[in-house]
Structures are given as structure tokens and as C-alpha cells.
Amino acid sequence: MAKQQKTNAMRILEQKKLPHTVNYYECSEFTDAVQIAQMLGQDPEQTFKTLMCTGKSGEHYAFVMQGTAEMDLKKAAAAAGEKSIQLLPVKEIQAVTGYIRGGCTAIGMKKDYPVYLDETALLYDEIIVSGGRLGTQIMLTPDAFLAATGGKTADLQAASVSV
Image 1 (tube, rainbow, N blue to C red):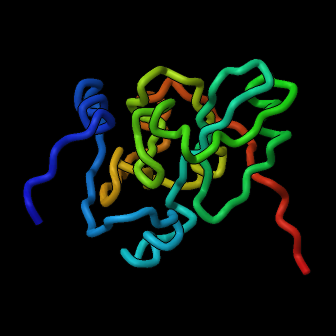
Image 2 (cartoon, rainbow, N blue to C red):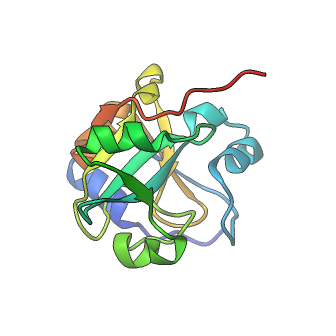
């Protein structure tokens, strides 16, 4: 594989001297966090996805969840202090964040949007997030992620339903 260029996320982590590891893998189109984790032999529950949302106020928010989990929109709205939120349409992700779908990370977006990391991240010594482009991951501690994004933790997961 050719030498990879640094992303905004990597530059910010380096500037802030936050420990992290970068992992590159072959990927030319959107693949979800669970499929990537399985492909790379990683724990899918340790792999986190970034969901961009818009609140009723019009503000944008980044919610970072386990790749295996569903987000509870009411819990997310409460965490953000909004009456309601909705997922940002896929076609708007790049314009709002500067990243494409599948490469979106809460670290180094075009603007410093409020970031909420699901509290399950605190169960792990290290979490895996997108590195800012397809085929790139960043592994770092939840504390380093929060320091890089100015984020907060919150309970964001929808209750799992057992059958």
C-alpha cells in the first residue's frame, strides 16, 4: 500500500500529543463499522461509529456509538439539550463535517460541533473510530477521544429488545 496522507483527525491528535494508533486497510466504498471490525478480526463492540444529527434548534451534533448499537434519539436529544433530533441526511454529511460517509470522525470536523460519546466506551481501554477517510482507523483511549473532541459521555443507546 502506498504511503498514506495524514487526516485532520491525525494532525489534531498529534498537535494535542494524545496517544493513538492508526490502522490502514483496503476499502474503496462505504462499509459499516461492524463489517470492518469483522474483516479485521476486531471486537465489533469496541468499534465506534459517528452519527451526525441536527437538533430542532438547527444545531449539528456528533454522536459516537458502538457500531453494534442503535441510538435512542430521545436520549440523544436529552443529552444535547434539544427537544428532538434527527439524523443528518447522508448527502449532507460531507458539507457539514468535511468527511465522507464511512470516513466520518468527530475529531477534526470542519467546525467544533458538540460531541457525545456513548458511555459504553468507558468499558474499554481503547476504542476504534474512523480515521477521517475510508480505509483508515484510529485506536485511542476514550479519555484521549474526549480530549481531542471536547466531548462528553452520555447514555445514548436504545434499549435492546430480547425475543
